[in-house]
Amino acid sequence: MLRAGFDLGLWLILDLVFLVSSVTALVMAALAREDAYRAADKQKKSFWLIILGVTVALNVFVSVLFLSIAGLIATIVFFVDVRPALKQVSGGGRKGGGSSSDGPYGPYNGGR
Image (cartoon, rainbow, N blue to C red; front, side):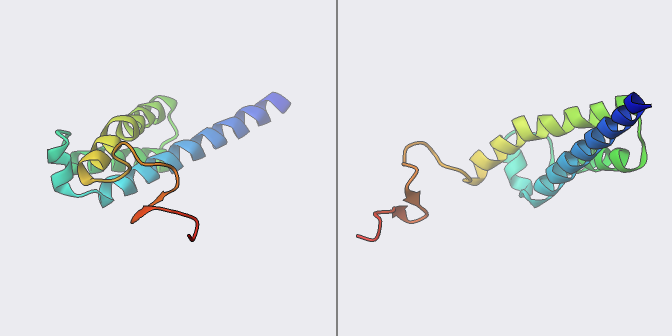
């Protein structure tokens, strides 16, 4: 009885993690510009929106482990491969150099 409750709780936590990560990836894919996908030499924006949208739908409506894992793999590929390439092309993030005290308009000198 205790093990069954633990298994159910673990599965619910995994479902929630899968859902949150796929919704986050879908929102990030939707916010990126279409031309950034082409410039980064990745699949089209519509491709990623469809894949991640199907992943979200599967996580919400279908509770099949194989499909959830397939959706998780697509989400991980987006986060690990596509998103960094989009950020680099779009000018997001730091481009080498700089220090941790640099602000958006140059180094922060502590009010001096």
